Image (cartoon, rainbow, N blue to C red; front, side):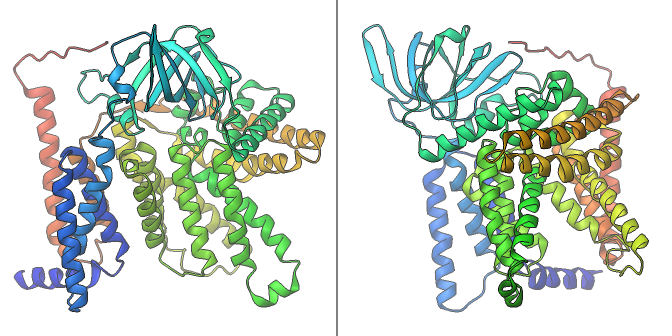
Length: 566
């Protein structure tokens, strides 16, 4: 057994760690981000440690000596430093957070995101510029999350606005395992909130300072909104189209959102990798058809590369059109990395390409690691990549059209299954609800939205500058498809036990789940996994189950939980 352990250790150290160097670098960087989150504020010591490891790397490089751990420690120290501006920020004396608890104030600033409307409230972020009260007037900096009771019309990102209200620091409820609202806002750079009871107290001062590109995007957004309002009569279908085409989810009612949630289709309402990927596929297809007409490009064998290069621009424009929310930014970056790999003809492993996308995203926005959509997106893609390798027909050729279609259909269903299984612990952890009909509903809804609704919506947008009436006709077809989708969603959500409330797994239990999945994937490849890993994991799972049975049923003491309601 000792010989087996030594052999495995040598194989891991010599072959696995740096066979795909980006993966250990990414994991180390993520570990540094986690350490920085829970042990914040040691910035100078972190700089010293990073400098020390960097110096060691330079010495090893110049002496041509290898090192397995120093690069990993260096990336971990970089991750620690990268997240410090969010978890231990240093603000100037004129930061807006220094005026919390005073006032009320008359505040002027610029809207920095797309206003969102839900539950008859309008929410947006204001980059504060001046604050005044009575004879006091000061220039300030910082972001304020403003909530207005009612609908504020006629405002958009880039507009200068003024409002009158009190400033408050966000506060968490004290309930166990509750949502960390303070951290959620701080990760967005927001340390101050305000509430205005009357929309009349919010005044638009103008939008002359916005750039030409922002002005064009606003105009395009307004034109698309006018198109959907004119062509689509069904309120729910119009709300979904607004969400898919311009990122405005204000038209999606709470009841409709709950229906999608119970059906396991809530991911269709938020712009993510699916939507950006389908937009990319649509334009890639268009560009490839157009470039195939050039004999010169066909002979040079560059049609695919040029199509991928041209597709990058529409993907970025679509991301900007729908508001470039954090989840959209990550989807655009992922699409950019994949398209760039095609342009430069890099036949890299898909896992490596995924690691590049994750690393780029975490360098640009380190706090994305702790965002729900980031975790769900990458775990889903990773689960699909590893799951597809298990399919017995994925490597065998198809002799007939019927066999090919059968394999494609089975693969499509398997993709949904792998994504559901891979994200299950995170869904339970964050939402305490799981859809029992998600596999069936996704097999119907995803093709309708991904292959029909989004491409037709993009086609209508492309036709809009040429002919408003033709674009309306295309939108009518899209509305018909959405009516079918809504009927399916209504059917699945109304089924008994379509969704069930569940327990909230601990981080330890989530780790056990993924460790068990990894062990099962390597069950046939490693004798060590069969003899050691699986029994240990099963013992831990049994111990965890006994612990919770004791906590739930066998304790003799009385415990009371007080609910914090504000």
